Length: 494
Image (tube, rainbow, N blue to C red; front, side, top):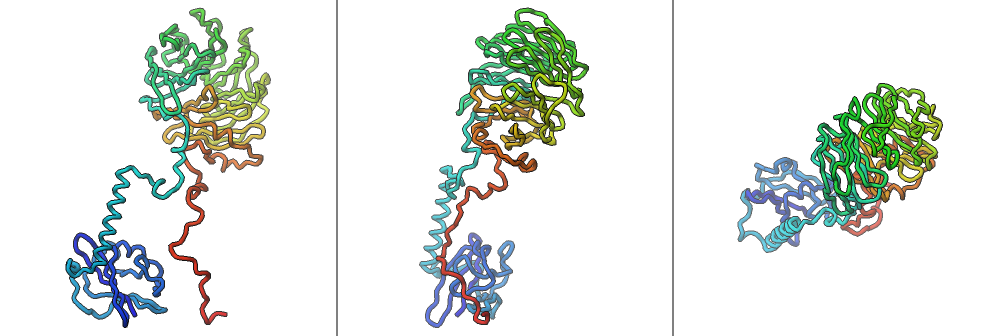
């Protein structure tokens, strides 16, 4: 007994005709040429032969064109081979005529056409791969946070409203835009271009009634969030471009410039009430305690400077680090100060003891541009490599990656008033939102691995970890054939 197959090319369809010949009967069947690509092992037995399991003709590889008219045979024995035999009859490449085709061949072709049409119908109806293959939807489709904002200009700073669902955005186009957000949508509320140069910083007042903006044009402005009118615009507030702002209390505002100067502003007056000189480097960031008495600034010369805002004098300036200090955050219920550096180091100071840090978290190998406290024992950092990472404190380790911007580094991050969402901005014209609920559900690990933790994506991230590649696939895939038990070993093997 043997199986003979002949290749046909009608110009519209390429197919193979199989002929199973024995002493008792002759059977014919037709299959698509795609089956050739699905050939299995080089041994074919009667039990193994099916429409998807047979020996391919080597000459049909590539474009599946054949100039030969001779048929091939597959012998059904222990040493199955695929070799040419003597030509039995002239075969036309135009394929059999409609009258010569059997009823079974016509039925198979109709079933194939029906399957193709049904597949195209599913595509037209919007069927997804998740629905077709019954797998879990991608992580980004299951997240519950506002949609990303396409601002249309490079974003340099963002700030959430302290009590309402509002987000202020500062751009390089000298425009400040305020958005109202929900979990389902975002809506622009107001935009203003009262500055003549690019913005550097935007802050809300503690009660949310005002928005403060600082610009490269050396000015500081105050907007009313109820009417969105400019209440005060202090032009020539500094002799150098203003880089950072800090809200001290309901009446005091601190501003720092590119030359190491910090000015205190009483919002009830037009001129500044005091000026601190920190050196000749940029004031990158400032924070203040809950009482509003101690103001700490991170400087580009590698030090931090602490000031008493009531007595208006310098408390202490720390020792210099071998890197610029770029961001600050008050953690551990106001007892610790976290300071980030441009080399990725994270320094921890005891509050009130700012001369020298007492602890240091492992470096991220990328500049820390910003950080915010989340809860009492965690902070979230934004790096120059585009990653947003969560850091556990006491013990110190990295909880994982909350999210990432693909093109540029993180310019700034902010946490919503209900501590549910995190917003991040970059120079790619977008503001992205991240769900922090996954971070709160992550337990702190006692043992850490820096190389793993720096790349470990949390559920809020839009990327899967390599170990999760097959997580949404079934553990066991049922076979088309029933399991018949272990194969019998050869007779000559004991």
